[in-house]
Length: 485
Image (cartoon, rainbow, N blue to C red):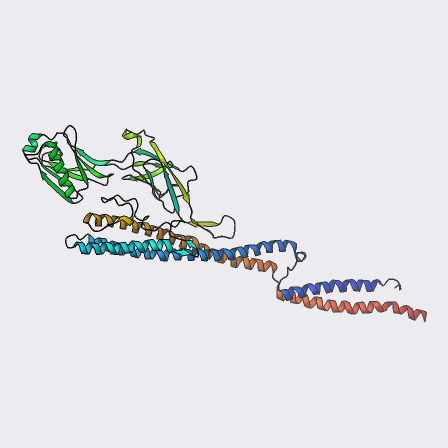
């Protein structure tokens, strides 16, 4: 073996191995002390990229969990308020039932019922105005679908949570059939001879009956006016008129197929086809048409977007004019205007990625918005207008309250389904996803303590061994001194 002074290859080799062992030992110490085997990009570039993406996903998923929990809190706050609204409506219905008991109520009792209903209506309005989550109002109508009618005789009545925004162009409303009232026109003129002979009439509507007999001193016009007054005084929801040719006409005051009445006259053809026989008149028809080219269901003068339609489900539109100037409409119908819909529904980020959102609409539950779209004899257009101080008013109030109860329970049902099927199920899924992501990220990034401890012990022994060998290698040149001696 050759021995040199200027270069000690053995020492250099031992030094290189010592440095390598110390670097390995330093890495083991860092992994053991930090608990992570990827502390910098150089520890594993590919693993770092994957684990950082997973870290971002875990953080986003955890925030999405918090978002879902907050969304559930919003829904529960709303549900609590709507539960109180339902309680008030049930109480109002009980009062309307009491007020309808006409046979035993006096004016004082009816006034007390109306006063209590008025207080309940004020409570409804207060709940609608003051229910909020943080600073966001929930039941004032600012978080639902709103519409503006453009067209003579056209009115926006309401929408459901499934009604979609229309954009600036709005939804075109086409009428294919005008609504009409049930009506009977006498085929025979009322003559003076019939009046002098004591013509007898019977008109029945809504469980009420009016009987009238002409008097000999009346002329035909006066007899018709007295018949009209008798019908009106009996509280029937029909109008009686006389044509220029002295034909009697009885017309229901309400539009649609849901309203009918019965008539009879002692002379055939004056009102009923057969003398003295009651004849049912139910020839009123409902409005028919489409909204945005989609199927709409007609009832009276109201069109409602049918279930399952793409954009207009639940959209209610009233048309109180006459399309086509009352003439026969073409098969395609006549456009009577449009409804511009906007949707300000609550939007929640319920997932960890772009586009993973959900929305829900909260409607105005004040008394001016509940109960709309109901045809009543009293002409009520919303719950706010109900008055139970008359029998007809109490009966119509019942219809309005029932519609309001349906409105509120529909909203509660939608909110319950949204909470259960969207938020709670998604929350459970997110928690599982977060758990699995953390486990996957741990597999990539966390230190296997047992394996790393074995590696640390090995590196420690090798480092100590390399230090000893370097010391021996540095002593090799000293053998030259022995040769010199």
